[in-house]
Length: 391
Image (cartoon, rainbow, N blue to C red):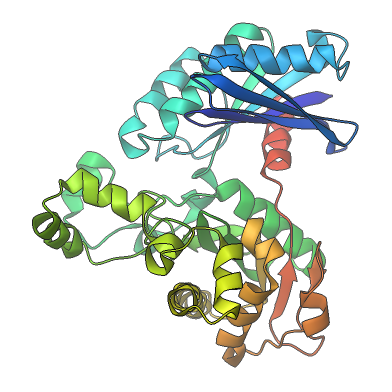
């Protein structure tokens, strides 16, 4: 059964075509710069990337481009082969505690949450509508970044702000990267042979979050109402005193929105280092003795360790920590420094294994807490949900 997993952004559309339930990737691709005359469509054919530059005025045209590409390169012989489409939706609020088959009412409900994710949900809806129009008789499923975290207790997801803000406006921690945290934690349970394992997943990329998973359920996570909360990231500040916004707004003569934009797009690695938001650049300059690059790295490591320590206490123990996503899977220096920072928990790094890539245990055999690299696969999680809801 062929299923497409879709991740639509404001100016991009990523997709992966999978054979299910075998979870075999047939092809994947990306449409970038939607809304521009020099948009780029990339599709993987026989392991090689084929690129095409063409005007793509909107997401509907982007979806048409994807479908035409699948047919043109004979990835599929007809649209009848596609039996389901799964859509990543960033914010499900408290309305969606599970993935759901998309209907007109579901689209309206997702739109009602736009205030909670103004940069993401409208783009996700645009992708949904484009695929529904082109494949009207195919099951379409919404898979939410927030759903996995709906098992958090009130003491984990509520802010110590006026309770009325929560009741009136939904002000609370929702968490994100849920499909990744779920995929990685389930794989860790398999590797440990323990369904009741206490696991921390470190999803470290340009966007980054940690999640405490106890017996397969998310009990806490670092991102909050928005993806700005938590640890420092590529361009996001992570946790910061809210009074900073008023201070900088007055001193720099900036609006609240402009300062918030600085915290989202000019902070983190980029803001502290002054060099780059890319972890590879940060590590390279750090190894050359660059002070601010080193500082950016050290701040993030310290904040990651803070969360791991708090989750260890909250869960009453820890069986494994799992590194995933672009940095987590590919930056041995980051993994080493995180593990060094939490060695008090009974974890020792296997230096040789840490230098390798791919799924593996990178802690020594005698470590009380195990450490793993587990490559994430959000597309597989999305396809699994389509398969489950299509039965």
